[in-house]
Image (cartoon, rainbow, N blue to C red; front, top):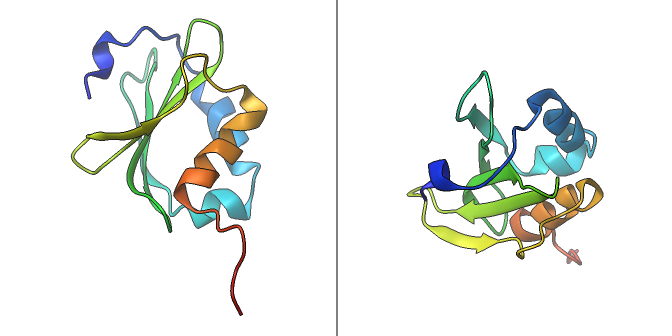
Length: 110
């Protein structure tokens, strides 16, 4: 995945982390770790490794020109498995969209 050519805006990482962590146990269930950014002075790409029920690999988060989030799920070799639609996600859709694809199970069997 060549994210250096992606058209995106700078992300304020503390706000993004606050948004992700505000979901509490949902975020923790992803097994998120290895948080990285492309440039600490002007980050445009946020990446984390996840180990969920449905997806194990990386999650890339970009902020597009419309101030919406573009998210890519990739394998550990950075092969894109899924991405958001062209228009992106609003901040209140971000955690749910990621969780649906990484960990969420609609009904648990007892």
